[in-house]
Each structure stands twice: as structure tokens, then as C-alpha cells.
Length: 163
Image 1 (cartoon, rainbow, N blue to C red):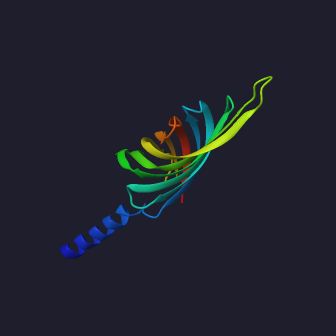
Image 2 (cartoon, one colour; image 1 turned 180 degrees about the horizontal axis):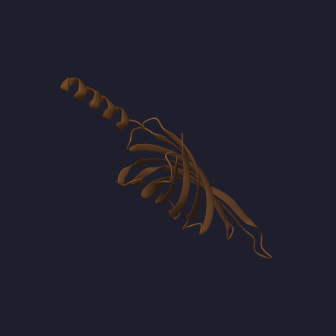
Image 3 (tube, rainbow, N blue to C red; image 1 turned 45 degrees about the vertical axis):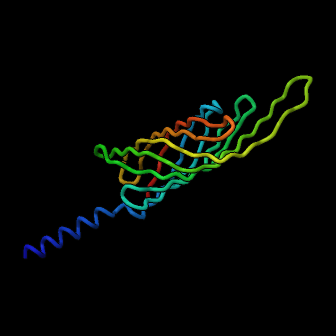
């Protein structure tokens, strides 16, 4: 009887330990870029590979400021640490593609405009708070390492719905 009870407890514990694996989430975020010196808006999708490891794909568009606008597409991995009830922190690492557009208009001169696409390496971290079982808010700080002085620090706050 003790062996059966132990086996049932182990089975229940293993089910609850993998409850998040396979979960997905969709969300929106507000971002600020240090190099663009502007705010932006983004969308993100997440997939939980395990309880602690999730992948995230995101797209952000930074509003035009002083003739410069930028958008990026990112693929990051988060490793989640439970630090308190409903609170998780995570480091992140990933790759991205950034596209910078510029247009300068000077009175009496020709218009200078163009765009430049660059690959990026993303390093950073964030914190997440679960408002409900399916709804969470987060804050994130990442550094996008991009060649030719395009690197920037990106601060983001967002919301995600898990399903």
C-alpha cells in the first residue's frame, strides 16, 4: 500500500512539474530605445519548452525621432527563476534583425534618406508578475549588440496572455 501511495504521489508531482511545458502566450509591449531615443510598440509570442525554458519571438517598431525610425525582429530564450509567489525573473539571450531608416531634410539642400539592416545579438533580463493564471505583466531590459554604432539598450514593459 505504501508503495502504491508513493507511486501515485510521484506521478502527481511529475504531472504538476510539467504543467507549463507546451504552453503558449501572446502579448503586447511598449519599448524605449536608447539609440533611437524614441518609444515603440511591439507584439510577442512565447512557447514554453519546459517549466523554466521558454522561447520568445517579437517584433517592435520604434517611432520616428529626428529623422530616424527603426524596427526589429527578435528570437530570444528565457530561463525562468521563481523568486516569490507569482514572481519570476529571467536572463535572456538571442538573435535579432534591426532595420534603421533615416530621412534628413535641410532647407536649401537635397534630402538625404536611406535604410540599413543589421543582425543583432540580444543579452539582458526581465521580471514577470502573474496577475492571474493566464495573464502576466513584465518589465525587461536588453542590450542589442549591433555593428557600426547601431547598438542600443531597450527597455520594455508588456502584458502577455497564456493559453
